[in-house]
Amino acid sequence: MNESLHKCDRFSGQINVPGDKSISHRALMFAGIAQGTSTIRGLATGRDVASTASCLKALGVEITKSAPDTVRVRGAGEQGLTRPAAVLDAGNSGTTIRLLSGILAGQPFRSTITGDRYLCRRPMSRIIEPLQQMGAKISSADNGLPPLEIEGGALHGITYRLPVASAQVKSCVLLAGLFASGRTTVVEKVPSRDHTERMLPLLGVVVEKEGLSVSVEGGARLSATDIDVPGDPSSAAFFAAAAAIVPGGRVRIDNLCLNPTRSAFFETLARMGARIEKTNERIQAGEPVADLIVSQGELSACTVDGAILPSLIDEVPVLAVLATQANGVTAIRDAAELRVKETDRIRALSESLSRMGARVREFPDGLEIEGPTKLQAATIETFDDHRIAMAFSVAALVASGETVIENAACADISFPDFYLTLRQLAGLS
Ligand code: S3P
Image (cartoon, rainbow, N blue to C red; front, top):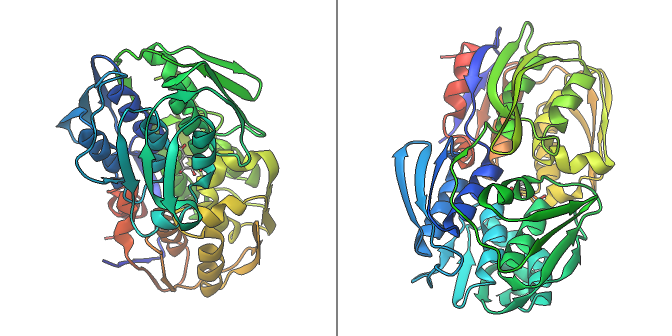
């Protein structure tokens, strides 16, 4: 399915976005290994989180849906997961395969986990190495690619210094640490998203944080709890960006997770010149949450590099689109991780932005984009990457002509109603 979009002359309204994807994966997994029944509300409705749910079901966790975004999870307990009858399928989801591998490494059975053709090209040696150090037996396809065959068993705690800033790797090691003997510590160079550290204590697990290191003790017991997942800032970013560049744009996004390890995109947007108001600030499920109003402004270029990258890594595609409308040269550097996301996002952005007439330079670790440019419509190859599809849908709203987003349904990975919501706000039929 392709989606055709064109320039709009307004962008306004109030929306809620689906529940945060990172928090939803963790809520399902942690509830799945807890004692008792947890209710999770506001669960992300996309295909990635459905992949986590179906893997957990295959491991013996009972999950029942009572509304499109509400589930009851009857946890198997720390010792209760059962050997899956078939290969576990993580679909397109890096978080599913990497976090679940940490849990699987500590189970007394053998399992195999794989994913779609895109996931099967993403590096897993970053989790295989620390899990092997903990005593796990894992084999993979060539070069550490999925499928992963995991012979779970007795693990011992380690101290692991993360070579790449990755919350997926950090969480994988900490989850394995729950099943290991002794203490497991992960030390980061720069902070990555900290949802695991925030959520585990809600289920009764002691998590010790000191500067950039985080530790758990093995043999922890998890108790069921109810979790209200706040809205996903990475999904909200597309609408905030559209409001910032469409003349007169203004959007209100309610109930948004604004955890500081996730909110750097909005801070950058404000720095570039969009007007942002935050109201109704509160704590929900251990996470800072607020309502956000974003209005259009005269945008100037910005530089994003160094330690800020992990806290806006998923927003780089839409940030690159914004940069085409900002005055000056926007530099996005130290972002080589983008090459191993759902697709090589640096390449995908550089090719498609150029096709729309943007002035772009590609680097091994990022992009420079000179704006402002009057974009022209183009046919956009998405490589089935949800964030590429959604970012170029935003670009289409300010481009002359009809932009065609190929295989647009990949937005379902994180946001099943994305095009409907975008069209409503933009007044497009
Ligand atoms: C995620 C962490 C990030 C992010 C991904 C979700 C998570 O990946 O890009 O979309 O839920 O932990 P890395 O940890 O590999 O950087």
